[in-house]
Image (cartoon, rainbow, N blue to C red; front, side, top):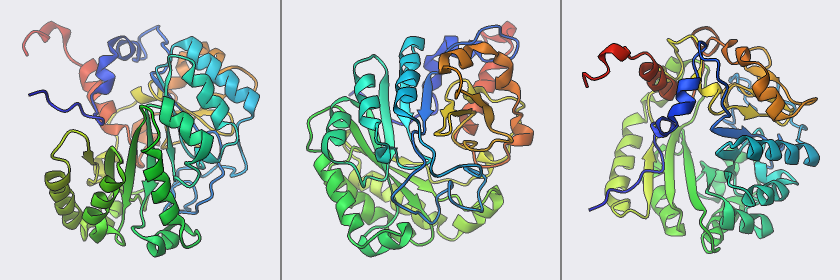
Length: 360
């Protein structure tokens, strides 16, 4: 019996050995990123109360201008560079909601004519029409962020009109009826208000036809211990529901539940002095700045790698490797980091004594 191939894994980067070997500061190689995250616009029709880009309690997005967006010609130039550099994948994300970006269909069409795979995050409000069709036919995946479990709770979470939840759920269901290869996932952002609804909501999402559901904790502070304290009272409740959902709802290979609900200390404190992932998955912001990662986007003091407002992305990337080592995670990154575990795995791989390699 063939095992189900996982959509989520921390080990994917190890299939790119040449890239890993090029990362250290003593290597004279600069290879293209494996993936680029593009934030095409900072505009969003939802106003999620926990949104890291709009919360004063979180460092992410502290220098963000909500009116910024990438001009059409510049976006197409960036995509030309990505194709020419042999970048493997592109993910559109926020900032704002990428499906609010007026030229997303042009970007998706250009990528669909190349070998570069692409995906997007969205709140699902605009997941309809020609844009939905081109993503369904050509994108690798799409992930909708959700929190409320019905119209009333959803409106309270997001500051939107009553009925928005029903509309988004309908968009999800209709998207799965479009022909194409795009995998559709939903991430449930768990907090104290929706914790008791996790199991039932996963079941409801499965019934819409989604391919995967990811369970993630709401981040409420830049301090790991404060996040752990916030989630401590609901932690067992959420883990038990997720375990039961895996047993009851994900027994077949057509539906995956990814449990990313965890304590957060190891994602805040760093014990390494340079960041491998800023060379693997950088971020292009709507302000045309390039940032080290999604957790430092729109942080001009400690996340900025440079600007491409007056140069191409390709010219910027290959011009100076020293920029990738100006951020010391042990000093500058004591906040939430989605790549921390992956960085530690890469560091362990790179620090192996080659003379003892055969003693496996």
